[in-house]
Length: 257
Length: 257
Image (cartoon, rainbow over the protein chains, first blue to last red):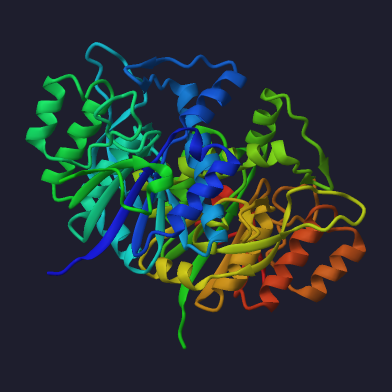
């Protein structure tokens, strides 16, 4: 069966949280042809609101410890402020956007992360993605905008990492579409040399990735990002691209296959 | 053409903002048979959050003056906190809920209220309702949960009264369904005597309404509520019921035809 193409873009960082950069981002996104999905973060705004409310932000390994007060904050910021402003911005560009959390349409079910060494609180690990209904909407040219929130099916929202949401959504939608998953971050791609912004590795496969990790060329937060990318490929995603937000519509960056 | 029945419920006040009462409310809502839509408020939580953030809440004629900071607050509270908790709660009852603002699916377009005597700020008066797409979703047994936010089509969200959202949605959906619009408030219905909770007027038509207004039996905030109800009837809504939230699934209250 010849599937239609779907581009799933993950954007995070301050680019989605400032009016001016968001406007440029959404214009770039509007130029991507065919079916598409946008997954966003909002961590800076969540931290800022928490601070204004006197709620302490605790991060471990880049993950937010989500107590009850923090869950309220991320529900307001991710599900409300960031998501709905993106939706309104896309509608202004004549894109039929629909903002969703994992609770909406029961799209993404998760379970509260088990406490091993660290208690992450109301953080959700994805258990099940119901992509069928979403696929139908996408076929009707609706553009889902996914906030990094899931639910446990028992009435509770859970905080879930946006990179994970993007990977899980891409894998589940791969049953219906030829999915390209694009992770936008601050660099032009995965770099051979951290100090040279133009040293983008154009293509990565798994053996090459392991070689670069052993050589210390790829390190830090890029390792889990790429490990997830290869998992997505194994689960049926056609390609994963790591690039700068301003290049999301050009196809440049590091291509993972 | 024989249309299918659709029940559109508007709930507001603290009942949707406290976990325990919300749970009961959602269980009552789940017992309504056939297609349904839930419209919610969230004013108390918005006022509380504004207070915590040091933002002054100004109300004129029961309407919130929505400056930029207040718009952020209501976007977070209505579009995020209240809406997504309702959606998660309904999913736990196996209802295929989908939370929406007027920006999602371009469902409800409004324009910023013109300044005559009072500047209401980012308050939106409804201009156009695109109910076709929503009707299709409802036919697929999806249950929309509508937050009291609209958009101007230029990328801006606007604060819109939940009663108005309910009436406008009901009128637009009347082209596709036999719509019953139920307004839930703290009393069992429109009362003949304010001091007697059991003096519910079972049926109101327009001549009777005018008579009661002239006699001073119906007064205050109930007058615009009922005026809107009669407008909805004239625009094709089959009936409007004013009742207590706990009676939403029983059909009792004041019936307006």
